[in-house]
Image 1 (cartoon, rainbow, N blue to C red):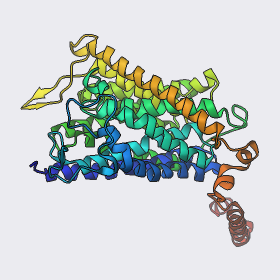
Image 2: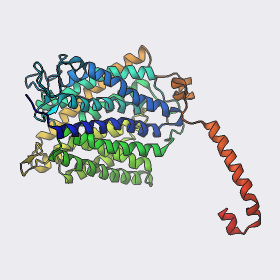
Image 3: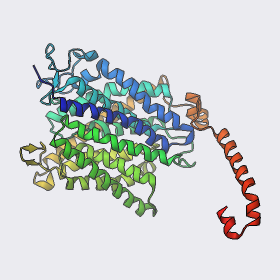
Image 4: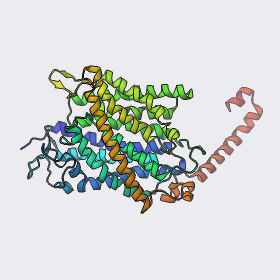
Amino acid sequence: MPTVDTGNTAWVLASSALVLLMTPGLAFFYGGMVRAKSVLNMLMMNFICIAVVTVAWVLYGWSVSFGNANDASGNSFWGTFAQWGMHGISTGIQSGSHAGTYGATNVPLFAVACFQLMFAIITPALISGAIADRTKFVGWTVYVVGWVTVIYFPVAHWVFSPNGFINAKLHVMDFAGGTAVHINAGAGALACALVLGKRVGFKKDPMRPHNVPFVMLGAALLWFGWFGFNAGSALTASGQASVVFMNTQVATCTAVIGWLAAEKIQHGKFTTVGAASGAVAGLVAITPACASVSPIGAIFIGLIPGFICCYAVNLKNRFDFDDSLDVVGVHLVGGILGTLLIGLFADKIEVAGYSNGARAGLFYGGGFDQLWAQGEGAGIVFAYSFVVSFILAKLVHMTIGLRVSTEDEIAGVDQTEHAETAYDWGGLTGSLHRAAASVAAATAPAIAEGSVEEKVEA
């Protein structure tokens, strides 16, 4: 009978909570970047993912993604339905033909299921940024359920399950989801943006972020939660988790520097939104590579994508598609770069009985083999996700509808989809007028009688 490792279990459960926090963080990150009339809709598009994906995960998602993970001879393309409804797993006790712990980690399957659930939640949520300002809430909800069912759950099995074909047969190194999460979501975002078409006023009306502090708050929450996302993927409180933690921090910081440098070259300024976007680009890029590179490698895996992704956000203008919040430029391009750069910077580390399990990349004497494998994995996930996402979005759009009417879009999806607004502009304006009048009345006599210095101070 397997023995539960309580330390590892505590780390996995804590990491699960950190990853869950990333979805509200993403909601604020995206919510700050949309216009004021769409912010509540963006928050809701992210929060509904938590609700519906959780139910789908319990019913069949875990079973499809990881149901036969302890069976080395299991199906490499699809899990099983034998554990539907979390049936047949326990908290560390042998139950039927399924062991109660995951692999050699001695972490209960329930804990691993909780951790992987949070990945399943945030992945479709990433897509929401590409279709901001114009999406029907019901259509989006149906799309999310369909997307995780036919795209995320099987791809997660390919990439994360020990017997998944991308993991076990192609030997693609993807520690925490560069392919299964970021390339997957980026491809889905591109497909959805193409199906929905451009926003009213695209390239004509100003569509600037309405609340930059929200953007920074969201980026900070994402950064914080990402330590659970990456280091938690070790499933052990170990040396590997420590290396991953450090690499995540290093790459994120250098990506901020890379993005700001590119921004200065392009526009002559360093922006707050640029710093936040650079951090996210670095987090995306280091996700697949965090366990297979040294901190020196992490410097480049942050710096290079940070610089390139700043330019990649202009792809929507070059190819004339409306990716509202640059999901393609950050998550798709960043995920591809992070996945490919493993083939260059992977460093096989074996010291004091510790091994990171990596195969050496080109710059560390490993030749082109790993780079080729990384390219295969990235290409397969992109092609599958894009084609199926496009078909699914078309089906939803042609049936219940995925885009609001032009009139509703102009009025604002917060009001038309949720009957709410984020800000009480009338009340706020009235308060400001009253405050201004009070200040003017109180200071007028002093200003009239005082010196120039007193007038300035007043």
